[in-house]
Image (cartoon, helix red, strand yellow):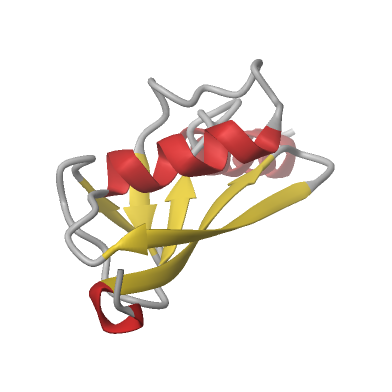
Length: 101
């Protein structure tokens, strides 16, 4: 197959302690789902949420059926332990309570 009919992207996933990035070589018309499947085959990490994690490209949420451009970084997102907005509200409430006492 001609080099011009292929693209190179990367698939990334991060835990709280480590970041994983898998380079993938794909047909030009490949989708995000197909890129993740290629990464899954090379990663040998069955415990990752390959099929369920929300995905995006450079921080923008996308559908698995979207087609990444050559050079895109496809990211699989893990759930947050807590909503950052809720944590901030709780911190502000603690500060307000402490200043009233």
